[in-house]
Image 1 (cartoon, rainbow, N blue to C red):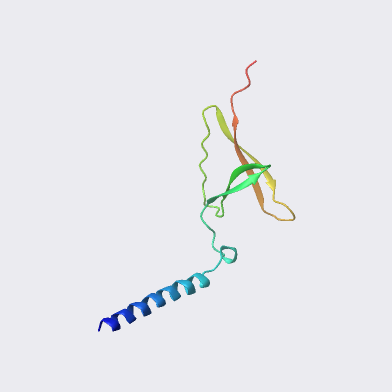
Image 2: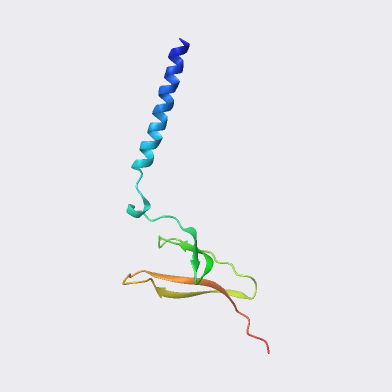
Length: 101
């Protein structure tokens, strides 16, 4: 009876492992997906400096930006490379107080 249970557990473990492998192969990659994804931050390099890229994919997404006191958010818009109709923007916090002499 003990050998039967040992064989049963081996079969269950192998079946679970095979199931996990098959499910990981069947998943659709995000590049092929047609559903918009939630906003996410991805590390990148801009002009040689490390930055975080915020990908916003749905028109209903809202992004909260907080700057230190005396600064305000500023966005520079530009088209993406090539003939892409998409645009991108660089969001920074700029000094909102006028320069003092």
